[in-house]
Length: 351
Image 1 (tube, rainbow, N blue to C red):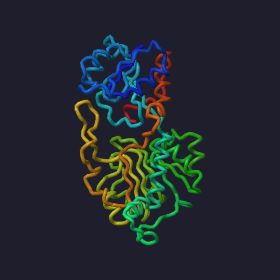
Image 2: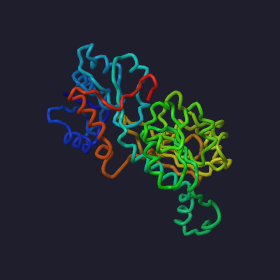
Image 3: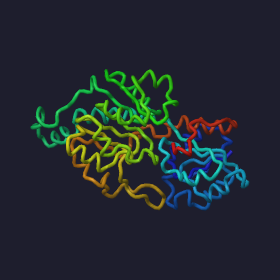
Image 4: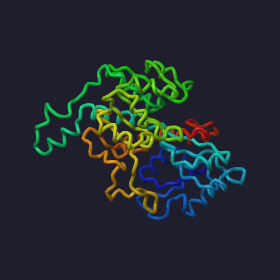
């Protein structure tokens, strides 16, 4: 059996995968620390290797690769795995044309949820503002500007109640808050989720949901339906002084709308991990992190009550793969044993 990576991976990720799958599974990959060529999905050797691959790793699938990898054309492809949660880099229009199964990973859910709670508490206590002043030896804001608020007794709304939202709810249980959820498909709600949340709203009840919350934690994927789902109208529906945390996708929140909401005091504070503007990608497909690049077209970075994180909620000292790839490895083993994979993506709904 063969696995082909369509993006560069670290040597540690390669070694970890080798340690956890059968020896007769072949891994074809470009090692990040050793490679400076084209993005792997444009590399002729990688493209040629995909013809005999049962699994493709990464969202960067092209029509050329699919045409030769599919069984109907003599290939062996059984599964495409996106080894992280977000799948918005997939070409859904392309994939819907082919009989292909795609799965993603929810292995980072707990880590991202921890980051969400960290952003929430940092925002609620206005830690960034006071830290910046104290680093200059300035104690003037100690009991004056930028007060803290207590989240005890607040209603926390989980916008997106999938794997990450569920882990957020578990962590929040110790904070004496009311938890409510909002999701697209109520029928997918598990018994565990029903116990964790006092109520779960349908996305069609978004106004009622937003009317009720003191805190919004957004963990939505980016789809046609969720792009700009929090816009000016939705901020108007919220209470004055709401706290917003986003660990989903930046573009689920309209950047002008949140900028104005913070500026006008509608939003007390915000914690944002995904952003709107990212550094450009270099020739290998990796982002160039050496140049200055502000996270939004609006000067959101100038607000002390906004906590910014460079889309790193899932980054850990142990290494992303070693901490989060348990379901990626499970899917590899399932294909190896000719079993049905988990975490299958609905290509029609784009999540």
